[in-house]
Length: 237
Image 1 (tube, rainbow, N blue to C red):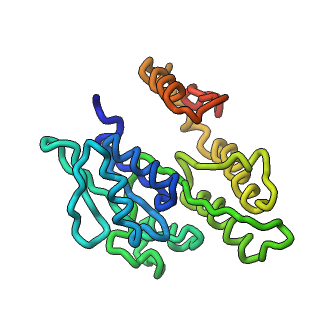
Image 2 (cartoon, rainbow, N blue to C red):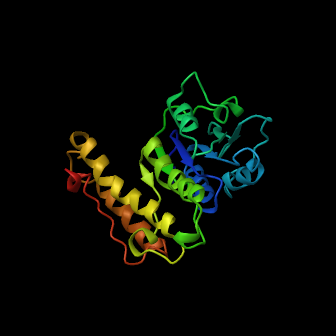
C-alpha cells in the first residue's frame, strides 16, 4: 500500500505531549519526514525516536544533533526527522523558527537546525490546562495558558489545530483553558475570510478522498457522532 505522505514534510508543534507525539508517529508511519517541536523535544528525543520507528521501520542510529532518519525498506530513501526545542509562549522563538529569521531568540538558537523550513502539513497541538477555579488562578498562569493554547497557534497559523470539548461545553476549574480553546474555534472564520479567494478547490471530490474519510470514520472508535465536511472548502466561500 502506498504511503500517503511519502516525500512530504510534516511539522508538529507540541509534539512532546501524548497526543502530539502520537500524531507525529502517525505521519512518520505514512512516510512523512517529521519535525517535532516542543519545550522538551531534545531531552525527550530518545522516547520520541522510539515512537517514530513504527513496527515496519528499523530504529535509526542518529548522530548527536537534532536530526534522525528512518527507512521503511532497503530500497526506499531514509526519511529525516528533526527535533527543535521551542517554547510556544515565546513569540520571538516562534517567528524565528517558522520564518527562518537570522536574528533568532536565545530559545530558538539552542539547536543548529532551529528552522522548520517549507512544510506540507502543519499540526498545532501545543496546549496546557489548569486545575484551579478562575478567582484562584494567578494572572501569570492565565497569561501562560492563553499564550500557549491560543497566541502560539495564531503566530504559527494553521492547517490542523487541536481544540477541546471544553471549548463548547466548558469545565469546572478550567476557565482560561476553555476560553483559549474556544478562541481556536473562533479563529477559524477569521482565517477563512483572510484566505477566502484561495480556499475552494474548484473541483469535485475524487472517489478515493471520500473513501479515505469513510475508512477513517469506520476505523477510529473515538469518532462517534462525527461529521466530516468533505466539500473542498466550498462551505467556507
